[in-house]
Length: 164
Image (cartoon, rainbow, N blue to C red; front, side, top):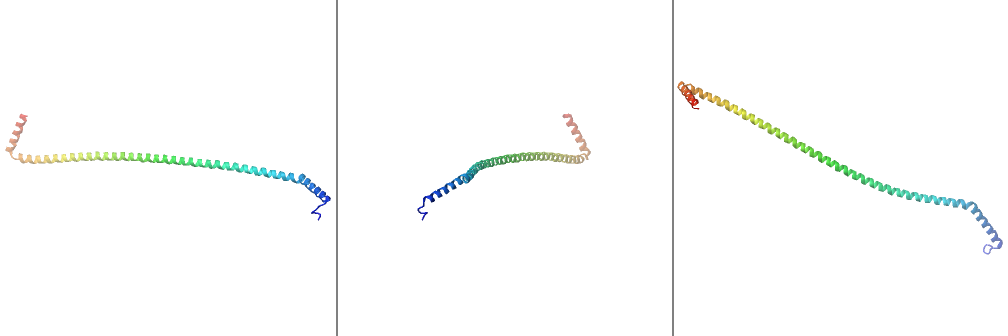
């Protein structure tokens, strides 16, 4: 029952024990606990600061990566555009060279055909001339086989020569 209605002596000794406990705790326990709490608070604050810093760096890296990706795509598009231009230039050059070569071949063939034609015409003329000479020779032999006709042809040729 003394706890329900304590006496003065009990209150004194409990207060003294409590004060002594507070003194010992304040002198030896609270400073290290407070220092540990303060260090922990600083460590947490520093960790939060580092986390914010890391988050900002990640944002910058993401932005940098996006920029690099855009630059790489632009460069790829430029290279593809240049490659298409080079391809078209090469195709155009090849087409022009092929057309020039085809024209040269056609021109050479036309020239060769013309020379072949002229050669054939010349040969044909030579053959016609040879045939004409042979025909004329046969006709002259036949006509000159008669001596009266020979004299008449010679006389006619002389008259033609003097008249001209």
